[in-house]
Image (cartoon, rainbow, N blue to C red; front, top):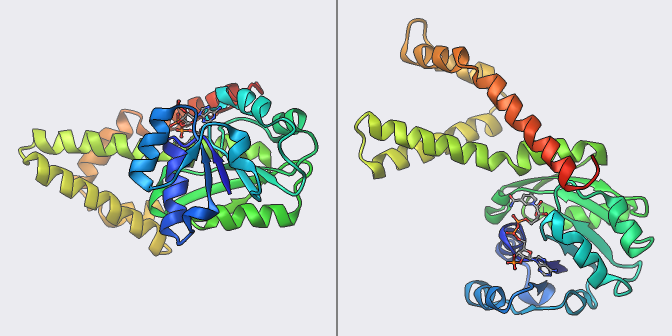
Length: 264
Ligand SMILES: NC(=O)c1ccc[n+]([C@@H]2O[C@H](COP(=O)([O-])OP(=O)(O)OC[C@H]3O[C@@H](n4cnc5c(N)ncnc54)[C@H](OP(=O)(O)O)[C@@H]3O)[C@@H](O)[C@H]2O)c1
C-alpha cells in the first residue's frame, strides 16, 4: 500500500495497520514537507518519500489521505504514474470517485470515509465503489480498512452523511468530554478525577451501546428514575434543544462535505 498524505488520518491508518501486524515494508508513504518526513521517521520508524510517484511504485492500493483541497495537486502529481491493476482508495471528505476517474483515467477508485479511532483499531468506515471498481477491488479496500475497524459498503451518495456522523463523530464526543470535565470541576472534582470519570463513563456507555442489544433510549430509561437526578439533567438538555442542536451540527457537516468535494 502507498499512503499519500500522512497527517491525522493517514497516520491513524498507518499506525492502525502496523498495530494489526502489517510490516513496515508493506507500506510506502508520501509527505510534502521534509519536517513532516522527519517527524514520521522519528515516531513510526517509517521512511516517507516527498514525491507521490515514488510511493506508488509497485503498490496495489494507493491511499489518498490529503485534504480535499489538495486532491487536485495529487491528481496532477499522479497523472500517468498508475496502472489499472492498482486501486485508488480515497479518504478525502466529499471528493467524488468521478473526480479521480476524470483526473487519472479509467482506474478502479474506492472512496472511503473512515474515522480517527482507526488509530486504536476501533474505526468505522463507509466505502463506495467508483465506476471501474469491482467486487474484488472493494474486497481489497475492505481488507485494508477492516484491519483498523469495521467497514460497510454503501452507495456513494450516502458518504457525505457518513462523513458528518462518524467521520466527524469523534469530535462531537470529545467536545462532550471537555464540557463534562469542566462541569465536573465546577461541581468540585479535581481535574484528574474529573477526566478519569468522564473518559471511563464514555468508554463504558460506548460498550453498553455496542456490546448489548439495547437501544440508546432503553439504556437511557434504565438510568432515569422518576423524579431522580438523571431526569433533572435530561429535562435541561431536552428543553434547551439538545437533539435539534445535534441535528443541525450534523447537517452543517454534511453540507460542508459536499462543498469541499466541489459537488454542491
Ligand atoms: N481527520 C479525520 O478525522 C478524518 C476522518 C475521515 C476522513 N478524513 C479525510 O482524510 C483526509 C486527511 O485529513 P487529515 O485530518 O488527516 O488532514 P491533515 O492532518 O492535514 O493531513 C493531510 C496531510 O497531507 C499532506 N499533503 C498535502 N498535500 C500533499 C501532497 N501533494 N503530497 C504529500 N502529502 C501531502 C499534508 O502535508 P502538510 O503537513 O504539509 O500539510 C498533511 O500532512 C481529508 O481529506 C479528510 O477529509 C479525515
